[in-house]
Image 1: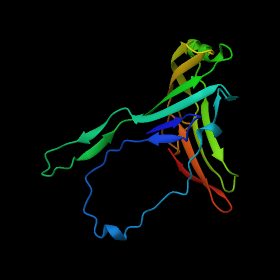
Image 2: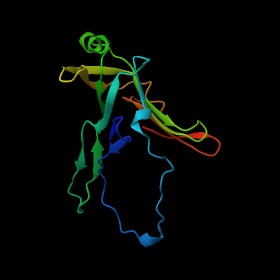
Image 3: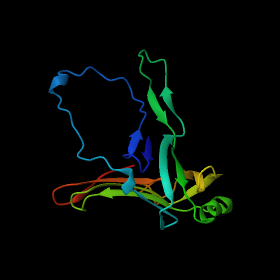
Image 4: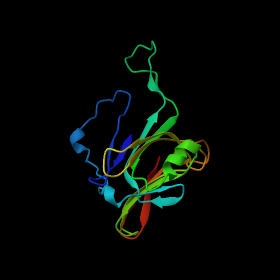
Length: 195
């Protein structure tokens, strides 16, 4: 699952799935389509905090969740379907492009600082708004590429979110991030889901 945030467009995502073979659906015309009430979010409304402080320097962001290993377990069981689908631990890589005003971000990379990074995008009022929050309590800076081909300097940061107990959605285990998607209703804002 990849989430892209660029101020010139709507937030967008792409996903790849693996599933077992489906059965025959009887009367597919009787299954009504179901659509989410979550409306698209413009990327420009998003903010990013790095190390607990809001940063106006971020030009774009890309979050890519993937399983470290995924595949089917094929056995000699007399049918074409695999015995099971195996997935390894969840990994999250983040790419941030930003305009630096000083050496703060490059020093995060050079010093091995493990910051928190939070992406927040909300629109509308609390009672009737939509939003998404991607919280990464601990990250590791893998690379910081400085480019000077424009009138201003840009830094491309390659970051891995580290699994921790703060970002988990349940009371056990570890997770590299907590994603909260909210959709407002007539009177209250409800949590739509967590990853």
